[in-house]
Length: 172
Image (cartoon, rainbow, N blue to C red):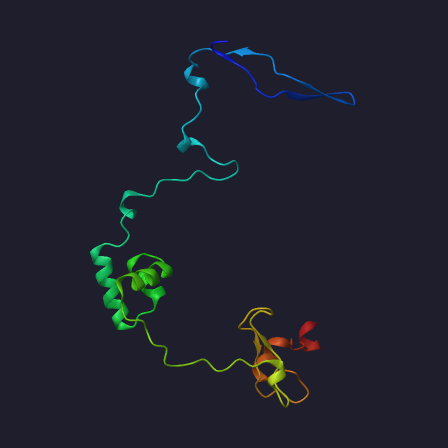
């Protein structure tokens, strides 16, 4: 059977309500396939429904040039934020953070701590119950400022929560 392809395991076939196991017939394959039958190169294969992946431009291959590293170091020492450093040198904030760690720049010390978050169970008297953040997230809390009499919110949040009625004379 030189040059013939055979299936080693039988092929299941359904006929009516019966499952019949039968071997595949032998097929002779040509020695060489025509060029159009060649499978595409792996680089040409793209998943269905996804856009083709483009090669990065040649100038983007080396992100961290000596000039960028020098600018990063200077701006970092001046106290510029990571987002602003990224905008100025043309990289993302996360790229700046990663490079700062890799080149060993001195970490910044946060001198001002944010006020403690207020949980609804922390209040002993009336407090603004305006939710801040998203429920279920770690930073979710309530405003906690002193509310306006008869309202559940402080002056600032009352302005956000309630719509002032229009004068009837303006509506006509």
